[in-house]
Length: 389
Image 1 (cartoon, rainbow, N blue to C red):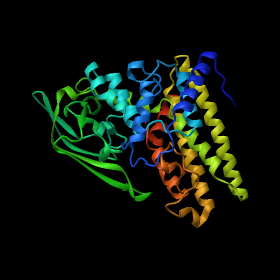
Image 2 (cartoon, rainbow, N blue to C red):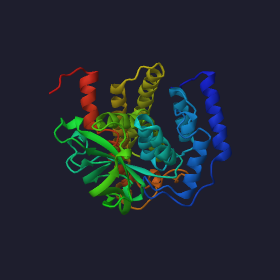
Image 3 (cartoon, rainbow, N blue to C red):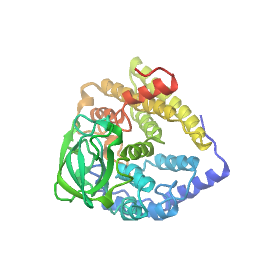
C-alpha cells in the first residue's frame, strides 16, 4: 500500500527533506542518558528545527511550526523516520508538556515555559502516575493546598520518566479533596530545584545503569499560583488534552518499530518464518488502518476509538514479534549489553540494543499513551457498543 498526496503536501515534504539533507548534524558521540537528558548537539539541532518551523509543524511559526495540516504532519514524521532521526530527546517535554502549555496556558506561560522547552533551553517531565494511581489518574493523592499566592504541595509520584534530568515537572495534584475524584484535580508546573522536591531515579529491568524512571517526593513544596496551568480543579481537561497530544500519531512510532524488527530479525526455522510473516502482515494492517484514520482526521473527523485500535495493534504486534526474535536467538538473545542492529547516529541507543533489552522495552509501549487494558475498554464501548459493566 502506498499513500499518495496532493502537490501542496509533496512540496512541503520536498522542502523538509531538503532542509534535513542540508542541515543534519554529523554523527555525534554523546548519547542521551534519559528521556529528559538532551546532549548539547541535540539541543542545537532542536533549536535549529524550531527556528525554521520544522520542530512541530502544526504549531504557528512563533512556536516552532508552520500551521501544517494533518497530512503535512504525517509526511514530516515520515521523512524523519526514513532517516532514523529521533524527533526530540525530550519527547514528553516537546510532545506533551509544551503542547499542553500551548493549549491551556496563558500567553505569559507559553513564552516563559513552552518556548524554552521547545527550543531545548529547558527539559520537562510529566508527573502523573503515583503509587496506587498509575493508569487511574483520578485516584491521585498528591495534594496542593492554596495559601495566598502559593500552593503547598505534598505527595509522591512514580515512574516519572527523566525527572532527575528535567528542569520542570508538569504535575497533577489534588486541590479539592471533597469533589468527585476527577473534578478536584489541578495542574502545576514545578521547577525541580524548588526546595522540598526530591528525585530518586531507579533502574529498569534492562540494566542497573538504565536510569530513566524516578520516584519524586514533594514535602512542603511552595509553588506560585501563577504556575497553575488552566483553571483550579480543571486538571482533568488538561490531562485529556495532554494525552491526546501524545496519541494522535502514536501509531507511526509502532510502525517504525515493526519495520525495524522486520529489518533486523532473520528467520531460520519454519516457526520463525511464520512469525516473521505475521509481523509483516501486522505492519501492513497497521499502515492501512492508520492511513484510514489519517484520512478521517484530514477531513476533520477525529476518531478516538480508531486510535485505540491502532495503539493495541501496533504495541502488541511489536511485543509479539520481538518476543519471537528473542526466543529464536536462544541463549545468545540474553547477552547484555549487545547490539541487534547498527545503531543510528541520530536516534536513541536502545533501538539497536540486544534482543533481551528490545523485548523488555516493549512492555513500556503497551503502557505509555494508555495501557492495552484501557484501550480495550474504549474499543469495547465505542467500537463494539458493549455495555459498561
